[in-house]
Image (cartoon, rainbow, N blue to C red; front, side, top):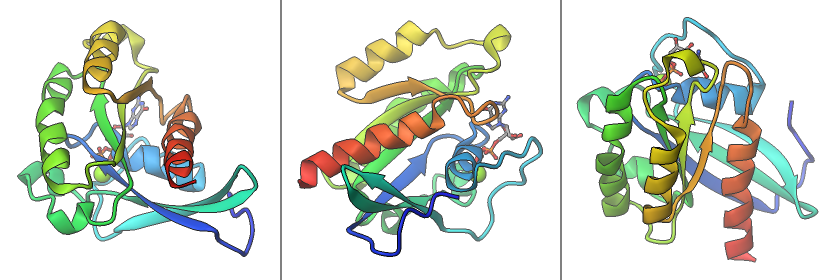
Length: 177
Ligand code: GDP
Ligand code: MG
């Protein structure tokens, strides 16, 4: 799934951040392997997954880093952010607290990452509309103020996951070209 060609023109490191259980690992799993698991164990060990795709006739290897459960202890280290050219800042649309923590994650990101890093805010679990506690408009407004891209996704239903990664990767591609 996803291997576009043998020759790689670019490698882009993208980091996933946000509170525990918002769906970061499932978003990655959906993007890298087109898989989803409802009872996903907290991530242990795996540092990143890759998928190679084609953007404007160039082969781009996306190297997506997942936090390996460290988000619980605020222990995401600067090594995690090193070399990252993109970041996906994820909250759960059914858990207001995970959205309220976004400014902290953004602060941490801006402290540790390159200042030109491309950031997308992601409201995940859009399939759980009946449990929504974060209005789309609130997130949209926040993203506009902070100059972030914004999308709501469902890793479960595969809604907008591809779109979210493509948004970040294409923007990075345009910056380096
Ligand atoms: P992480 O801690 O941020 O990596 O979160 P996980 O990817 O481990 O997901 C936490 C829980 O939310 C798991 O039970 C997932 O199956 C579930 N989950 C993840 N994404 C979605 C989604 O889009 N919709 C729904 N309904 N559940 C999801
Ligand atoms: Mg995880």
